[in-house]
Length: 143
Image (tube, rainbow, N blue to C red; front, side, top):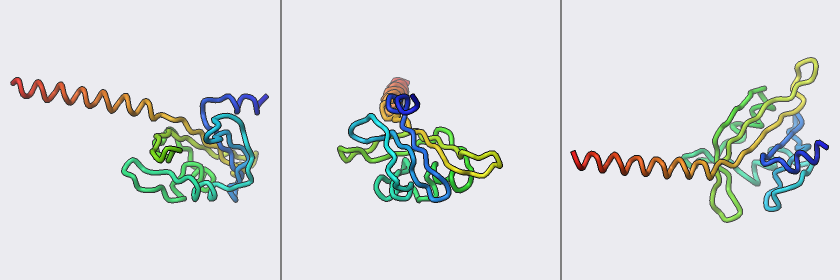
């Protein structure tokens, strides 16, 4: 049942084991958009294949990735905006959250990260800002 839920979720989920960062679950299957996989790759492999970018275009360093921060430091990351490359060569804006998974003694045994594509929402906000600025400029010109 859990696999079926993960396959249908409109949110990407990645789970990686500590300390090596081996990915044990990933429903972010790229082009197909559905399914789950356990690749045996690490988050470091992901980093070299699919880098994340800050809003200013600079690439995230490995230790800046939300999932890596959760695995290494136990950090809980909520709703961090970042950009990823897409199949067309453009970029998509993602909202990423992550958290450590701890065993009964409190040791970090894994980390989980969610990724939500918010590109459309960002475009709507940008359009709204452009319209607002146009109205302000028009009012200032009339005064």
